[in-house]
Image (cartoon, rainbow, N blue to C red):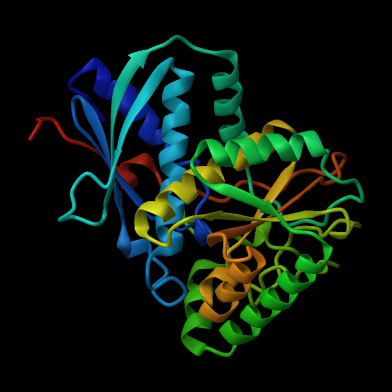
Length: 329
């Protein structure tokens, strides 16, 4: 692809880097348009989970993670990102516009964060029986708060409530044939088309965990490992509103937390199933004592460093998600 200005070249690289972001079921539900002086982010509803996510909450959170990844890429080239979220009230799928702010130079921390984005992955293996150090949890919380969200660490009895909610969500969703069909579409096999969750990152059996992981309706080829989740920390990312702008910010917070965890060798695993069912979403809000709206549950822990990490799922080619617009409108 060709670009028409130096700024467009920088912004194009940022849009390409955003393709490394996490998304629900690896749907990658975003679309970028690169103009000579700015970059625009749109939701791509052709990759929305119509049954599990009819409101687009998880789709928008996924796009927020991509937005944060683009910001991280710009910082790694020494640029501040000037972001306008939801710039067009008449076009709700137009999620953000990014232009280059000040050129501030390349900080070592920005490079490390960009390197973390390149190795970040979803790891569904069992955890070792060693807790995440409190100072690392504090740094992850600070990363979330820097994105105008909050991170509530669940204590032991709240984890039990979470386990019940997750199990209830699985029962309700497994009883819905259309939800099962949608899950089957996105999960399993080799996934040569560039989206979805391949067998190589799905556990080969049910892990020994107190909080059940999502049942994908099939087993994969990922070895479970010998641990469990006794040393895991479970947390809820939450904020003041339950609106699309808040969901977008939540995705940015998720990305910030995940990259911070990755830099410290901590595994972060998101749990979206409890958010997909209104009844269990209400349970999560009760765990917050009414202080805000939950956006996503995450598990934080350590995996066996002597075991190979699971491969990264496939990604769409940049030409499928990034459009170069040659003239300004």
